[in-house]
Image (cartoon, rainbow, N blue to C red; front, top):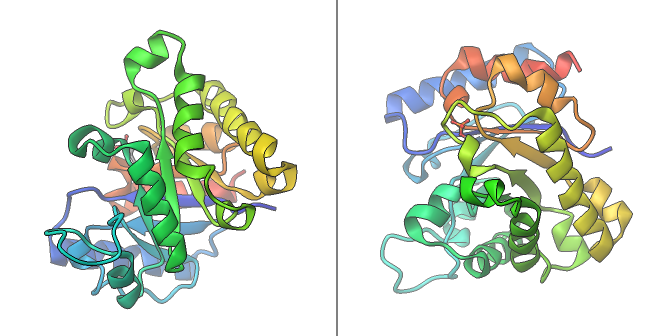
Length: 252
Ligand code: 13P
């Protein structure tokens, strides 16, 4: 059975003391409540080296990674550097990176490839913007993003990728895709992978939903057959909401 995952993306939030304390709270919550899912926290680069956790079900990810191996790329952080501070994986291709840093599907594909090469687990983000949804183009947009970024990988490589579908219009807006909208896109993504790599590979890949997930709507969304958890922004920034989201898997 594929993994169920609750992942937080802290984005550009928290000072070092705040980050340490939230991470310790999450770690101890998982220690004392046998969680039925894997938990990931995507945290700012500067805190990664200090991010020591005890529980094996809690993984620490970066929020981005360089597409280059090393060299004259001022401000970039490489896969090798992340590996050297024991990071488990990276969030790659988030819509905020696409929007504000003009990342392309080709670059995102290169980042995924290099993460895998260094043994880091990529969370590949895709999702349409509001205009594309209104024009009924969301299936095509997600198809292209997925094909360009992932379909150069071998079956063995793609099996190590986590996918996060995040409709851009639902991120930080309070507006969530309905469970049915999430399910139909997740099923679409899974069928694209099945067509290319076979059903067994497609069925092994966790596909997370992201966009205004909170304790009050998580259960309905996570219960859908092709939704394997969530990538969570705002509600990942405090222990009460985030632990309630982790706990959702005890109720499904
Ligand atoms: P919100 O949960 O704040 O909508 O953010 C979602 C997101 O972008 C996670 O990567």
